[in-house]
Amino acid sequence: MVKAKPVSVEESEVKVNGDVPHRNQPKGRGRKRAIEGDVKEAKKPRVTLEAPKIDGGVVLTVGMGDIGQLGLGDGVEEKTRPALVPDLEDIVAIAAGGLHTVCLDKSGKVHTWGCNDEGALGRQTTSEEENFVSGTVQIDGTVVQITAGDCITAAVTDDGRLFAWGCFRDNSGPLGFIEEGNIQRTPRQILSGIPVTKVAAGNNHLAILTYSGQIYTCGCGESGQLGRIAEVFAHRNSRNRKGIATLLEPQPIKVYSHRKCVVFDDVWAGGLATFARAKDTGNIYAFGLNNYNQLGDEDTNMRFQPALLKNFKGKSWCQLAGGQHHSLALTEDGVAHCMGRREYGRLGMGDIKEDIIKPTPITALQDKKAISVSAGECVSLVVMESGDVYGFGMGTNNQLAQGDDDDQLEPVKLGGKQLAERKVVAAQAGGQHTVLLAVQK
Image (cartoon, rainbow, N blue to C red):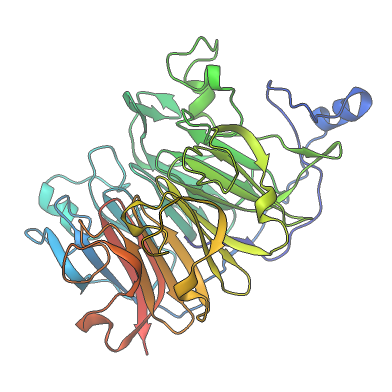
């Protein structure tokens, strides 16, 4: 996932709204000022592509493609080694959804392919064959950042506008998009009038970072991944008087430290969880599913409100990635960490006997500098500064490009003819497939 970063960010107070109190919320006059103080957003922020800094590369896919998510044409339903997606040039960013794929070219155009049952491609397809090849999404503006979930896709333009399309789901089926039951098949602007610098997608929720350092969330909240709704109201059948609109309409989370609103400078969403980094302190907050310590916290309770993660203190973190029951984290000095469930080797720590409850360096990769991490459902990917990409975890869907379906308990280098003369600059793990962005060596 590629972050869209403003050229400059001005200090500003965060506007607080909503109706769920927090125990650290300011009282008296301080609380009144926090609630009534409007965010002074810049009218036209310029948002730029932060990384990877390349002129443009090609897209490679590997794994299962029975719904078209490989983009290799009708009839290509599986690849055990990375294959080149045709008719795509000058690509600068990629995103892997559950059963679809998204990429961005250097001119700011978005291309999609894969499952379109619930509008994830952002374009009308009239036949199944159209889903197996890339097509361009029509968006009014120059896109600089993309993200994808199970059936949801979103993009940020260079002037800070946010567009999204598709449908959120929960354990009972489709929830809708903004409106209950609605499937949004073409891009729709959301949070109009509020400049956005980044959007991140979990399986069925979005986390949105604004120019002023607020985080808005929307989508499914059953596991706490929205960070702003109490557990009793987080399901579609709850007695919340506002109904599903409380989930589907983007609203800000509220975090206070020493009676002041916390301002954020980055956010990551994955699986059923969300991570955020405080601007002034670098502290990491998280909310969502934690049944296998995938939040890096020492108990396994779900977090329905943002929790400060004490185990992340003392290091500078530049990226976090959430899978189903595990997470990866990357420090600014390039050390990849893991936490959560150990089965199938998704932590890359060999045949360990216990889960890992806090961020721990991946032993086999400590002598290499990593530049990005990605966590799929039961697999993990780590891209190195050298241009190599390592994978580990479940081999069933051939996402690890080893030519077989064996699980990999320790990191293995992804290989194949298409990677022989190419350097990987980004990798994304989807539901059953892997997407690579590569350039010539």
